Length: 238
Image 1 (cartoon, rainbow, N blue to C red):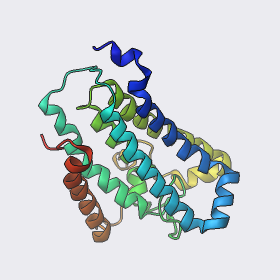
Image 2: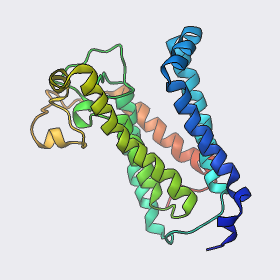
Image 3: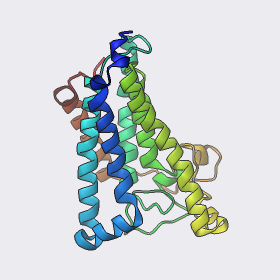
Image 4: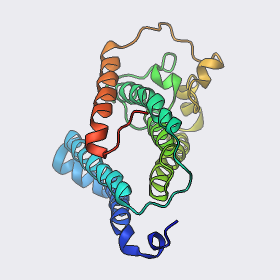
């Protein structure tokens, strides 16, 4: 391992700055007073559009900064490791596409205009936190072929935050709604993906697939696959 990668702060300055800006871009707008002021000025949709746009730009910077950080190998690269993100990303896109379009009062994201049916919770019955599981799966799968310190910190951080976020949201929702009311909504869902289905608590009346959401997931997956090499600089294919 090159010792200079550890002792020269300047080599890590961009990565540290990008990480700090990423954390600030999420922490500051989430403060109630700041969010209320921004929503009052921009409206709910305007706030969400601005927040999402800034988040994506800062995330792109952070990923790029990780690639430009000093290379400190933690484990050797093997070609088979590329299978992990390639197998995971279709499921990531499916979870994200269906999670964004679903009614879900038990987690963040989803479509607030839709009514939630605790008897037939849809994707929420497969995973109570579909968007957070998408982040956890994305980061965990990308951690496998990226065995250097910068990328381990990057993807490990996202995986940890996603998993911890699910626990925190469950606890916060139980406090706000009361455990009985929360349990009435969550009884046919599960923290771990597909646990409610395997346990027989959630039995879908129909296994029909939302073609629109499926198409969105497919387009997102193919777009990410096509843009990975020109944007990230590394081919995603094994």
